[in-house]
Structure formats: structure tokens, C-alpha cells
Figure 1 (cartoon, one colour):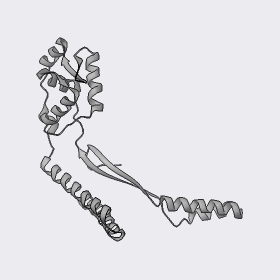
Figure 2: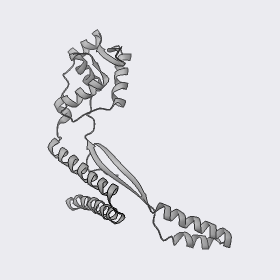
Figure 3: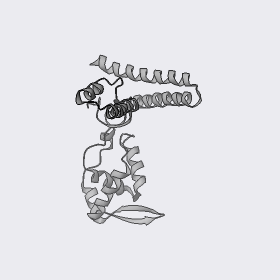
Figure 4: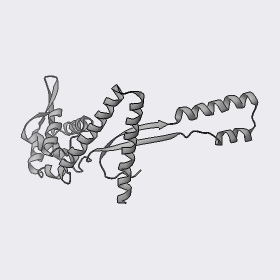
Length: 210
């Protein structure tokens, strides 16, 4: 599947017509057993299914991909300033990169563990959290290595447009959720039609540009 741009996406997957299709096939199986259908009758019934089972996947862009490069260098650059907790490092990376990169705990802590195994950092418990500090060896590498280019992580990101898109998406889903919670069945159906039509119109914008 081709995506409009590289990065991290969220999505919603849904089946349509699945229950109706399954119900039809179950009925065919039951009737076929009762009436002793032959292979030709079964094949004909299978081909005449009045419903269509479809799988849909809606994706929306969340943020740019994590920058390429030596992750060790990024973490050593942070710890060169002062000892930090893992969560504090995640926040610091987000701030220094201008919000372009906010790594997940699942990517941060394994890297920190690797640095500790290599003797470049140490960790000590503090208030139920781990406080990470550079060792002499780690500080030597941090001092002699190149400075981390935080600007590189945020390069090419139009944050004003991204914020507008995010607010528009949240506003649309908030309005849809309100209708779904308090509206009548007819109003819910109208709201669903609006959402489906909006999705189709957005895809048509991409189709026109191609």
C-alpha cells in the first residue's frame, strides 16, 4: 500500500457486510445439508451471494518518522548536560527537536540499557525512577563526538499546518461524537453520511492532484 508521505500513522479498521455475508453462507450450508445439494448447486449458491464483505482501513498522519542516525549520540548529548530520567529525556528530545521527534519509551529504554551494558552510562534508583548518568568513558565519547543536530530532526516539518490539521480533525470527531451520543437514529445516520462523504472527498483531492 502506497502512503502519501513517510511517517507514523494511526488508523481505524472496519468490516462491512461481514455479518450479512456470513449469515447467507451459513444458511446455504444448512439448506445444502438438508436438501443434499450437489457441487454445482453449492457453487451456484456461493456465487449468488447478495451481499459483499469488505474490509476498510482509514489512516491519518500523526508525525514524521524518527530521524535516522546514531541514537547513542543523541542520548549522550543529553546526558552530557546533566543526569536525567528516561521520561525527562523523552520530553527534552521533543523540546530540542521542536516537536519533530518524541521517541516512545519502547525505543528509549532499550537504547539506554545498551549504553549501560557498554559502560557508557550508569543508572541509579531515585524516587522509584532510574537516573541515568554518563560514565567517564561515556563523557569522553560525548565530548569528542559531533554535536547532536537537533535542527535536523525538525527540518521540513510545517508545524503551523500540522496544528491546523490536528485541530480540524479533533473538531470534526468531537462534533460527530456529540451527535452520536445525543442524536436520534436519523441524526446519527446523517452524521455518518457526512463523515463518509468527507472521507471520499479527501481522497478525491489526492486523485485530482495525480
